[in-house]
Image (tube, rainbow, N blue to C red):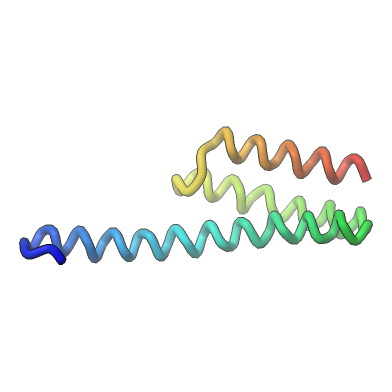
Length: 86
């Protein structure tokens, strides 16, 4: 545990930021999984709709610094390829 006041504040801020980042990352992963579940089910329309929801969630994560832009591009590309291959 920190003893200095500023270190205590930084610990509080870090925890709050971690919780916020966790919330955003979890939501993004859920949208990606929804696309994958629709693909497994074989429902192309549902997969396309889920993909349209996942793309903004991924982009939002990039803008907030949760994931790297290259990871986002890779994820979107792979999801799109899977949806198009149906």
